[in-house]
Length: 253
Image (tube, one colour):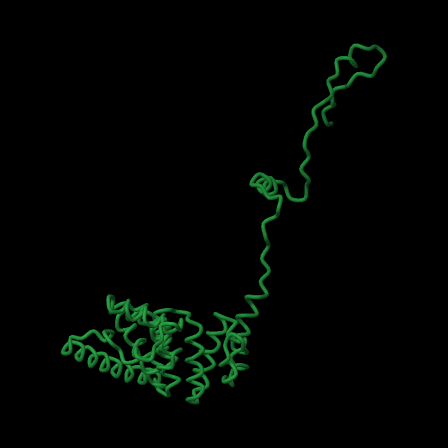
């Protein structure tokens, strides 16, 4: 229930922010990429700065391109402009509400800025539009754990680990060190995970053919297949006297 209320509040906040931005753009009728303030801090000889300039130039032509907004947000974050990066991630999901990478990145930066309500909403959207988004589920687990919601946190962790075991590796997911309920999540995950891993499936035999399968299924139980051998008919034996001639088989009595 708490999660639903938080998501509802965040949705209204996000909708309000988007409406304000749209109104400002409508009245100003100015492309926000004509001359953003951070452009004066860029040096074209630096590869990162050159990428930012190229992405901004592309957005001047395609201001509703969600992928470009997402790319610019990541570049600006690397450059040290977190607020502008957050704005770009918001513009990405405004351009395409189903663009789950933008929702996930927005959740990360909001969480880093202490906006946990907005982050929870963003991570929830990422999972909604990309069911099984393991990283977003893990982040939701972290937030539930910090809020003291143990049951919800363990459930989110277990789902995340069942989808992507690499999240347990600190080299892949450094924030695993911040999770204190991992042991409980693994216990919850164990029954299903153990049952799945214990299944031993048989591969197809290397000498398999459809005919061999049919022969095996039609063979009477407990008996071997005997291939009949044709009788020997050698004219040379029959023409020589003194040699025993083959006798016809007697019928059973």
